[in-house]
Image (cartoon, rainbow over all chains, first blue to last red; front, side, top):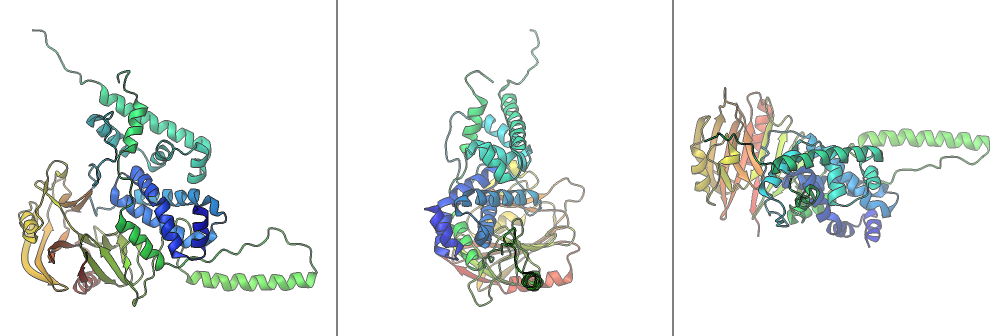
Length: 183
Length: 280
């Protein structure tokens, strides 16, 4: 179905392009939010990616590869969003406006806080592979294709990022050391 | 970490948290902007190897290709930059519907901010850029000589603007609720307050200059969802807080000590010519 829409949109059919947004838009937004951890910047990244897609669609050789191509544009838009550093707004960590989609009781407030902070310290390179592999479920080979680096680089980025995130969780779980004085 | 708590499971659950539905205004913005954005023509692809051909024909073809390349080059030089990684610059017609604001350089023309219950249409001269879907500005946007304007619908203020993480408070929906909350801001000088009207909608015009000299503080003025408006030392703030048929709209302009007179004049013209429409 998507391939047919891509072919029609490639010929300038706006209705088909709108349907393509309906097919992939939510997924793209979910990915962008998880990379950027900010709803407004995620919306901006998705908007930029789709407009780029519309503009360049005629140069997409294989409509079957639209998904990978769109993810590549989205990842580039997320890089660009991460690169911008403006004092327009202050970034404050907080739950998204529409709240967590899943109220998972396995995560404590401390876990969430630890992961938020650790993830914030990761570079976009590392965030992207974590999200594409562990949230979207893409194989490393496909991530390498999207990001444009060798598979080995994807592996090492993922390994590094997971080490940081696991360490943050373990540190959050350790009881605070308190000095105990004998009575 | 106890044996029953698997960090990888926690990480996966944490990744699942968060929004998963692209907001409708963003979808609409993409649709409208794509209608105003032409598709690039399919790139010319020549075969990687020519078949043998008669020498004079080959020479004639070489001349033809050179002419096409030179002519095409001149044509492409006249086109806006494009390609993967380049910024998409919408080119709105002055007669057509305004294009939704978007990140990046904006061609001269009419643009729209679509908020909750309100639409703001602006006419921009050359040289302005979109800051997300709710702001415009001229580089560097901030200190020392930038300028920026936002269209906002704040829901919160900060009792301690230097510590926004711990002092967020909801603010009532009326114009006066926000005016009162912002009228006693610390670390500001030269505050003024006056009645104002833009595009037929009345409200209050607040102005002040942020003075955080010697204090390690970027002021948080107000919040809207995850967005928090920042103001730094020397920033001159103009806030038009308007009542648009029961919906509060803030037009928030910031200039800086070295913002040029020309940019200030452009800003004034943009604000004075805004068209505000209530929407359902």
